[in-house]
Length: 275
Image 1 (cartoon, rainbow, N blue to C red):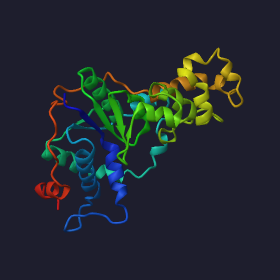
Image 2: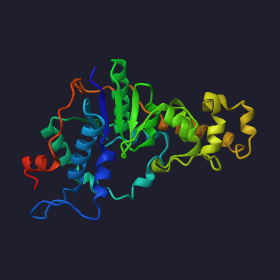
Image 3: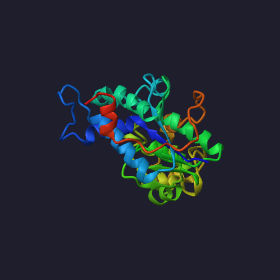
Image 4: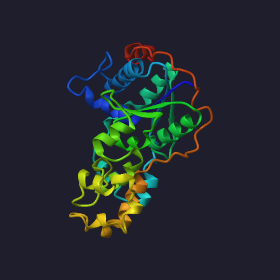
């Protein structure tokens, strides 16, 4: 079975846009900033060639209303991003056109985040007997790691369940519990005051989840006395961090065939008359 390379499209676009901030890449007449689309295509091509040459590529983007479901649970979800610079989004239409020209499948569902699309793609692929590489710098995807699913970060380091356990002292399945306790600043999830990574890992040692803690003597540990007062919020945060693996995907989202090597970024931009 052809392995799947599921790519976090928004993460790659933002990284590409800001990664060349000192020297912008523009069209010949200077009217279009092509930094985002050029970087996106160049990084994707290199990642495919060097880390996943035999894989099928599918790129997942956030939908326009993607945050609504989680914001309904907590209005503060990603509220910190409201004032962020979202200039990279200007490149999104060009990125999609370039992916189409290269024969790369991409998916954007109006009401769903790209992470949930990747989680569903991963779930469906592994059930069909495929191995999966998830390319992203978003650590929420660590919860997907298994013997057949690895996470490829922007440095192209392949993260396995053993790596997660060695570094964070929790399993991939415990990741939502762990992040609910410690918080996730990127998504504006504060976590419990005073609960850092070491304390959270001690609370969850031996494979425990939040549901195992209410009657546990572990809550008598120093710094843990506030956890009961945060209990309802903790469960909400965990539910928000958990990825959805059951999103209805459009038919033929994948082909199960290896993606041919991508053309160079400059060639694609030339073909699309963007230079």
